[in-house]
Structures are given as C-alpha cells and as structure tokens.
Length: 277
Image (cartoon, rainbow, N blue to C red; front, side):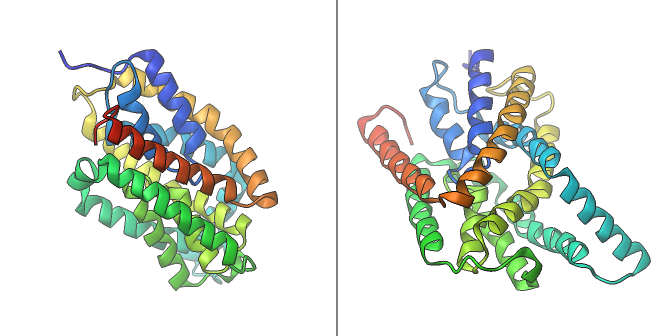
C-alpha cells in the first residue's frame, strides 16, 4: 500500500505553508524538504502545495480587502465607463499583465514542474542563489520608488520574476520582492505588490490543481488537504502582519541568512543520504 500523509502531518504541513508562504524563503521548498522527513516519508506533491496556497491567499484577500476592493472598483469603472485611467485602475491592469507569465509558463512546463524541477539539489541551489540575489537587491537597491510610478515594463518584469517561483526554492514573494528592489522600489512597495500580484496566480493554480486531482487518489487525502488549507489560512494571516513590520524596520537580511543556511543543510542531508533528490 502506498504511504499517505496522516492528519497530524497534514496539520504540520499546513502550519509550514502558512509560516513560509509570504516570507521570501519558498513555501514549496519547505514542503518539498519536510515531506521525506515525516514519519510517512511522503512528498506531498505539487498539487498539495498549490491547493494549500489557496488558504494563505485567502489571508491576503482578508488583510488587503480594502485595497483590493478599491482597485477592483477603479478598474471596473475604467473598463465599463471608459473613464480616466486612475492609479488604482492602472494597478489593476498591471496585476493582470504580471499574472500572464506564470500562467503561460505554468501550463507549458506543467510536467517538469511536477517532476524534474522538484529535484532537491536544484531546490538547495535556488535557496542559496536567490538568497544572495535578495541580499544584493536589498543592499544596493535605491528603495525610493512607490507603486504609483510603476511602468508597464516593470509590471511585466515583476510577472517574470514571480514565474520563477514555479521552481521550488525560488519563492514567489522572494522573486517579486527581489525584482522590485532591483528596480528601485521601496521595501514596503515591493512587498505589498508581491502580495497583490500573487492573488490571481495562486487562486488559478490552486483551483486548477483541485479540479485536476478531484477524486484521484494521492499522497494526501482530500480531507487532510482541506484541514491543512484551513491551518495555512489562520497562520498566514498572522505572518502577513509580522512580515510587513520586519521588512519596514530590519530589511531582508534575516531571510537571506536563513535561505543560505537552509540550502546548505539540504545539501548536507542529501549527501548523508537522509533524504533523496
């Protein structure tokens, strides 16, 4: 019989998902690393990761509900009434533009994302490499621009950076925040736009995986996945509040150190044969 993730393990995975989704340390990498270390020894899989991200993204919707409603109203008014393109309406179009790369690349490389790109050596490398890139961006970026100054080119670059998170170890928030800092945006602006940009992509990916895996036996039961998603929502909401406070006062260096150390630990576990690639 194929081993499956227990309810307690599902709660732990949901907790990890909620803790790591919004931090620039890659939630998918943590789920990929933790799975083989659980008593069941099972990789929960890309589908489980995508579905539980719905929970954390619901936390984003709740936390940023005022901003989301304002942007949605301005965008709808501009489309229906062909009115003036306000900054909020423009931001709505930029979120749509920035969501296209991850949607297209996710469909084109779906098989690789669910198999070859989950190699643990690749995950470790991405943790370390993008940790260094985040440090450079935070250290040398101008950190002066606001979201009102975002161009269409910047919106597309943000989207391409988000698409890199299809590889475990990159981090959705880490990729977009790094891109934002390199383009001169402030820490707060880069973090907030990262949250907003993730909403369409995460919901689309999660709902697609939910539809695709519905009724299909997997390493995690549907009930356990639902429990993990609920846990991820509750934990994720609290993480958003803490994360925005940390980056506004201390910057991203704690996450840089964590990423590099984690990447080195993963390589050590691989070399010791504790986990397999």
